[in-house]
Image (cartoon, rainbow, N blue to C red; front, side, top):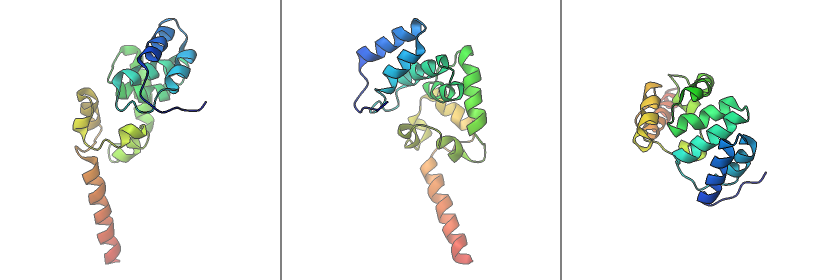
Amino acid sequence: MSYRGGFPNPAKRERARALLDSSKPAASLQLLAGSCYGAGYDTDYFHLLGRALLGCGQVENAGRFLFLSGVRRPEYMAAIASFLAHHSTPRNFRQLQSQLPERVRVMWRLAQFPPCVAAELRALGWPEDTQAIIVARKQARRKMDKRF
């Protein structure tokens, strides 16, 4: 399937929502996957995509998008926990960051995330400013390299 650019089409999103409500997650996933670029950090889109992936049996990938959506329903918690268990390490936020969509990876301040997601990332050991941490680590490595 090829991916197209542009902003999500509200009518397409509602068709995808109706397909999910009528237990047709594969058809919904196909609609949603074709309109993902240009959406920015869109919690509704992430929620729909997570629901569609979960309905298709892609539990860990569904957890990725359900986590980002900020929606915490009991039926989503196992998928979110699975995703975080496989991709989160308290001492290395970059491991989880590398598993997020590009439009989310470029967000370097926790204040840019929805409040509930920012709080969970903070609890997972994410710094308030990831870019400052990355730069500081690179500078420390350069200093160590110069010493040896």
